[in-house]
Structures are given as C-alpha cells and as structure tokens.
Image 1: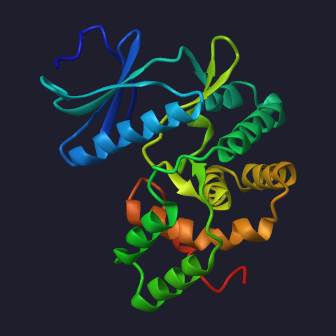
Image 2: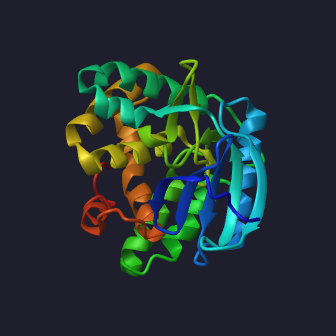
Image 3: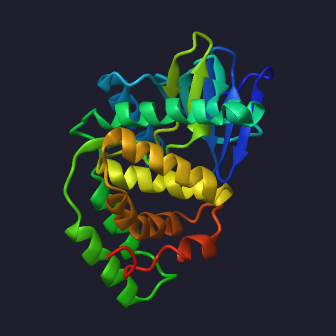
Amino acid sequence: MILPDSKTELVRRGNKVVYDLGDKIAKVFNETKPVSDVFNEALNLARINECGIRSPKALEVTEVEGDESGWALITSKIPGTTLAEKMEAEPQRFGEYLEQFVDLQIEIHHHTSPLLNRQRDKYARMIGGLESINATQRYNLMERLDGMKKEFQVCHGDFNPTNVIVADDGELAVCDWAHATQGSPAADVAMTYLLFALNSKEQAEAYLDLYCERADMPKQVVRQWMPIVAASELARKRDLEESFLMSWIDVFDYQ
C-alpha cells in the first residue's frame, strides 16, 4: 500500500505516525514495532467492536511502501475532536468533561471479552523482564500481583482524554486499544491516575475521587495496584519520566 499524498499527519510519537486519510485513519509503525503487535492491536479492536463499545472499526493490516514504510493498521474514522482538546480549550468545563470521561470508563468496565489477553499475565511478563529494578523488588511486585483479586472486565490499558473522541454527533468513542486486556478495573484506574498525575496531581486526585465515588470502589484497592502498573509502564519504555514511575514502585506502600 502507498499512502495518498492528501494524507494529514495527526500524531507522531515513538515508533508510530498516525495519518488522517479522509474517511480512514492509518497508524503506521516503524521497524522497531513487531509485526505481531500490529496484528494483535487489530485483533483487540475487532474484539472491542464485538463488545459493542463505540470505537473505530478495524479494516486492514497492511505493509506501507514509500517514505513512511512499515506496517500499518487501517481503521475507520470517527469525525470529531478529542476530549483532551476540549479540556484544554475550555478549562472552566473540566469538571463536566471529567464526569463524561469517568462515566465512559465505568461503562467500558462493565463489558467482558473472554478472548482478550489477560491483564495479570501481561503484567507478570513485563515485570519479570524489567532490568531497572532489582530481583527483590521484582519478587515483591510479583507477590503483590499474585495476591490481587482475579477479575475479567474489559480494560483499555491506556485510558486518557487523548484516546476519547467526542464525535460530531456528541457521542463518545474510544480509540487506541493496543493495550486492551481483560482484568481488574482498579488496575485500569491506577493507569489512568498515573497518566493524569504526570501533568497534574490535582486533576489526578479529582479523577480518582470521582471514579471511586461513582463506581463504589475503595481508593485503597486502586492504590494497591499503582506499584504494579508503574512497573509495567517502566517496562514499556515509553516517554514517561522514569523517576516519576520509580517513585511509585515501592511495594511496601499502601499495605
């Protein structure tokens, strides 16, 4: 496949570039992205589509030729703007947008998809291969993970306002399901909390207060997941601040 000249670059981050092709979206990965991961993201998205969660449709996985060569995931396009853009443009309405965001995440957590990868298996694999912490820390994290309640709800894995689309009809949709698993909603909440906290501790606390109130979830359960989630993020080697994540990897906190 050769991408059309009329494409518009939306995001360039890490090992991917996202293009608007008009009626479709192309997420093009460079050679550092395993091809199997691209197919797995397409499979995740197909399973999320089947759950009834509003999200782009997986259309094709293809090899791209030309200047932006690599493997690409082609999806349908949901016209609209991201919730993050709305929050930034209208800070006085942050509370209103946060309510929509939390309600959407709670709705997602009510779904199940038995064929999605298991969250705790993913965390165990990532923590087990983490070289930036010592064996004792890895052992303690694995012990904590093993002791957490086993749950099997749909979890986005990277749920933040940049991945929520406010469609032109006002309905909300969710994109970027590369890290979707079946597992504990509290772990998913811990991930979202950490993403908020990177930019604003105040917004992170407001999010956690609202989610736990509306979902009737104890904050302590979310906090028990935070060292595990922070370690998994450290293993992903994204552009998140390592010292920030390391500050959460103290398995003796929140006992």
